[in-house]
Length: 284
Image (tube, helix red, strand yellow):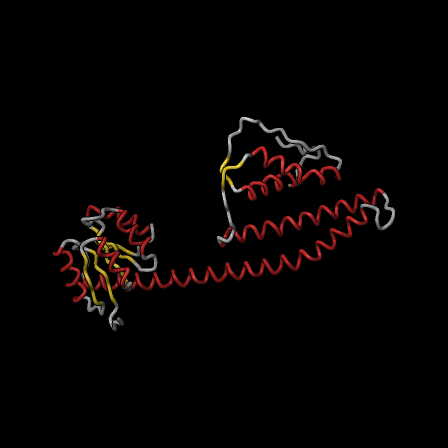
């Protein structure tokens, strides 16, 4: 059903306070049409049927008290602005509610019709701005993700080509090289590896920020994971003439983690450049 007047839901169990709110709306010449319920359960049921433009919420109801009241309403209808109706002794709680996302609060018996009308109008406008900002933020994140995905794809292709040709020359397959040339090739290869790692980290950070990174934790044997990381890193260690091994305490219990993400951490930490020229590539 479509209404020409904005709908306001009043959640108040005290009939006198509810009548006072209606009176103040009339005094403030508000165009809002008000409906009243006296329990939180009835409010949530009403919100399931139709969302109002605003909720006027008493925090102490027969079936809910204090901060839990506005938390339940905000969780149920996060896009509907809330103005708390507070008693004198609840003012500190009302201020805390504002800090947690409630748009405003009014002390019962202490507001005029004009103040009530202004509070409703400002709350609706602020909530609209918050929605617009959230939509804009999501669009910006999506655009950034598409841009990073495109750029990373465009960069990976030439980097892979550079990596292959450097390896070909370093291995002597394109002809003999001098010691000095091989040193230069090692520096170039290190730069390529760092760029590849930076691209990977950018994509992982982007997925984490947008909530698209899949994390599937389960009980895993940390020793098996370390041995797997060592096996994956061993070819690189052999090329660099580095001894690589692992010693894991058999008493370490199973850990609850995503094995793929944990393996990424182990490999990344092993390949990060160190300030010490004598860094030992040994995991323990």
